[in-house]
Length: 324
Image (cartoon, rainbow, N blue to C red; front, side):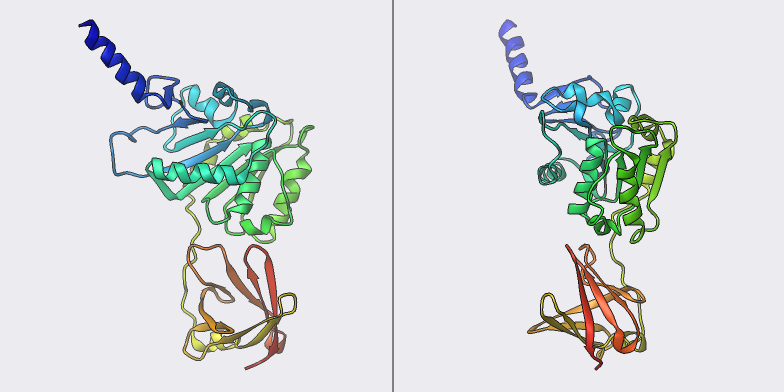
């Protein structure tokens, strides 16, 4: 009997070598490797259902090697207190004295997508303070990945935030924040609003650096977030006459590239050297090439002053040099 008990104990230890349960119920945080994990109700019961995922990035005070610190603030704190959410929550921990590295977080996301049943059209990103900066940075570097982004009292490179033009975004900040000034979020919102007018911005007039308590206790935040799905281009029909206005030869002086745009077959074709692609409309003057890639082509101007911008990792401007 003693041998059987020891054997069972040994098998239990082996099966849990990479997972230590912080609580013994499914709806509590689980400590796994270098992140906290929360699995929602029903995850184990339905082996086919896929769930939304929220990636939560903590602030600078929670860095280190003790995952218990990650429970101090934000969504992990709410889960530890007993609140239940209908999404998978993953809360990694940054090493001591280091910030968030987007490429490392992307590797984590890829491993999570292989390990758990995740709805890839409903990946969400949020973080506070240092995690707010990390959220802006990752959303800019991987603009086609997340269905929505919620940076709290953070900031980033406003010159690149246009890359988030198709990403629903809700920003939170305290007006009296003396650690990360309100200006840090305001500059990002102002720059993003030019390309993404629907960006939401909540400023708490009496809050200091801790704007995250109010933000993550906002029930409408989760309703809004979970209603968002990853942006995908959707082609609309345009008649040939609408397409013909864009015909011509365009040149980019910086790259010395010439692109011919032709609507002869009833679809818009871009031709450069020996390569050509169909340019599909999703608005009257806005076109895309692939549904799942964050690249689009926007025409502007009239007649011979026509030009277009290719929004890729940077913006490439092509001006018409010859009307076909």
